[in-house]
Length: 382
Ligand code: CAA
Image (cartoon, rainbow, N blue to C red):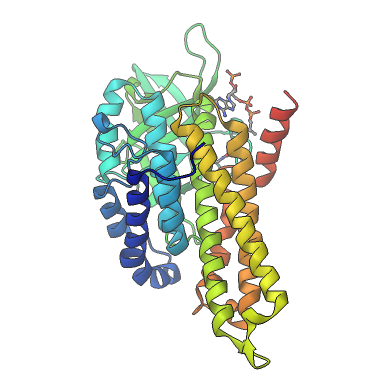
């Protein structure tokens, strides 16, 4: 067992920290206020290899691996959690799905452009009536003229408004001799009959784009199918195992950012004639926060290591990690605001944004309740 980063991993994480400080930090407060994406920075991250971290070099990626990705995600999330989720969706949900389920032609067409940041990708699974239960989705794909015609509306799609490449999941007809099911498709934003719908106005991660995706008689060729017809739910759920590592690293980054702010503030803020960091009540709070961040971080790098080691399945571990890291981040951000007192409630203080940004980590890519369900059925062998 080796708890040291390799030289390459360390360099990637240090580079992410520098990028976050130099390129994300100066813009994040204003973009958060306006609800706008830092697309310029996101594209730059592509040029630096951070949008293709688990993509093989022969497919145009930087192949730095899941551990380097998780460590870099922590650094981006500390500063701009909205930008971080865009990085996470690109790496974990889009690139990984194309790499694992794509045909050689799909990999060749999509991966180099995604890994370089020329294209931004999104993963459109959720619908208004199908969130925790994606199997109940209503968007359809009907076979027509040797291809498919898609109809329906997806919602809450991260990166929706900035996406060039789209993975969408639909209910599909039974193929000849087969059963009906869910199918995944890979398309570009210029597909006829596709348009971006409503842009959401969110509580947190306001520097990310979240939209509806509207398909009205959207015609796709047969080779737009991603993976086997009718087996799309497997594509979604297997991909989400990796996605949950990304969201857990986002939660760890937000929590670590909040802890650092709380420590700094506690040393500066004087009450009762001394810095509040000298009060035992505050010290115990900070000690609990630091311990919880460390536990989640250790777990994060272990699950990321499992992915890098090519373990065939880490569903239970990814669910445990995402559950713990997101709920830990909730507790840590709550305490960080408390340490700041009234100032923590004010927008001038970074913890106010981290507190809002944290909340979604307990909801997207599977709510805490869904993670508990996945863990329970795994340990019960159900
Ligand atoms: N890996 C590979 N295959 C898997 C799998 C996994 N982790 N989990 C399930 N499967 C397979 C099953 O074996 C099954 O295959 P067969 O049809 O061949 O038997 C198939 O996938 C369907 O699995 P289930 O029968 O278990 O499916 P279910 O309908 O009972 O759902 C669930 C299970 C755990 C509740 C699942 O629906 C779930 O995880 N829900 C949460 C949805 C979610 O996370 N949404 C996130 C949206 S994307 C997002 O949030 C991105 C963003 O914005 C940042």
